[in-house]
Image (cartoon, rainbow, N blue to C red; front, side, top):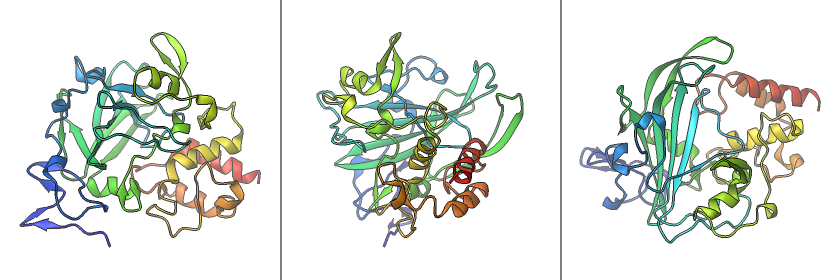
Length: 325
């Protein structure tokens, strides 16, 4: 049974100003001082120059996903850093093997006006750091000056306003997750794990140094992964790209947004529905449970963490798919 251990009056995941997830379970047993996170995002030297420009430095490399997790229409920048002399080992279409010292960085932000994308507001940056064969999670909240982010010890809500592509002013109460929130999704057999950085989700074309290149090939050339032939691995569709079949677009969206919880090792293991891309459709029960899936999405209850509003475009696509079944 998962539990939060206290040392004196301090919760085990809040220690000396740091936030971490020690041990082999979701909140762990025992502590390890080496797993503490630094108090400011600037302590990691992730960005160079004006932080709001999000220019990676100090060995951090950009990566992009074919299909990303929906988070209230927030924009996201994803970075990775691997210790010198080490690489990621690719074993199949799913998560690769990451060496100790790996740092994953995801920054959430909103353009002030999505029609020109010149100005933006940074909201939060989430870190996953692998130490002693365990992942440590931390959320950093950007200050009003937009020059640094401070480690959060709990969740919070932030008022966010932006103008969307249709010139509509959007206002939301954006939820910045606490440690409990992160753990509820990044849960594989009660162990903290990355979610989106699967090989099939990286297997796509990107623009790097003014050229188009397969991202897996680029990451190999950048020293991030071991030698890899992209053609040997599946490529997850970009769910918004109409060149793909409707079923493939729907399954890609559900794989990224739902499969991590709806799995034998996830927090929704008792559910009869599975969403993973690699599972044959008849075995997923997606079609059989279509009314339940649509109902929960329409209520904003799925995904249950990380969203406060409904992904209307995805919901419309999924409804269209079920209507044709």
